[in-house]
Image 1 (spheres, rainbow, N blue to C red):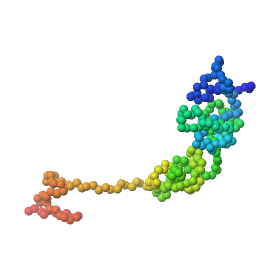
Image 2: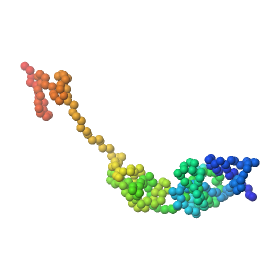
Image 3: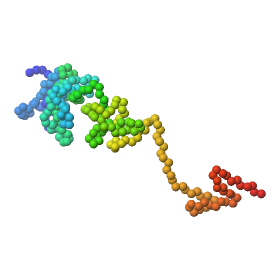
Image 4: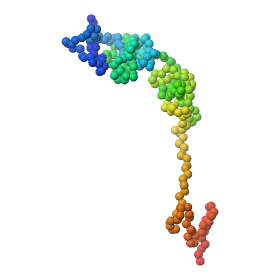
Length: 252
């Protein structure tokens, strides 16, 4: 026996659990968990790991834990247990999603944490000091190979690359890119990209289009058949010459 804070076993269960709060006179079964006696100096983090990345998680891997309730603080720990079977409670939320309960023991010194706090854990698989990386949304796959669109002249062109691991934000580029290359963050899925126009240059004017000419109608002559000109009025002459003007003689 030792002193400490008592936490009922039903306190940490999800809202979909049918467990009732512990009370006097309640019937219990053999090996049923009733209470917990958490130790302030030894805290554990329970996280859910997707099956798509489960093969990269191993016991003993380091982890970083952060909490929104305690901004600016980071706690170190290690993976101590990975469940052999997927979590059955997730089937009610998404039957196609399979996650495995994973436990992370925090190192000594996490005395300011409280049981039941929400946190975010990052399991460190590999660490790189100085590598080339691009945003993960800039990489697409064409025929099973990763590609990015790189600015070449005035347009983006597709270029194959070799990638490594990612952290859901940035992806490691092993080869195919240089440090000063400009990549398209939202590439299209076509074979070639459209020409790129810098913002400093004005956009091109739309091309001129030809339209059928409307015949002119002289109001003094009334309606005329389409495509014909009205006859000249009295005292007027018309000269067929570009850029020339016919003057009328003075009347006597």
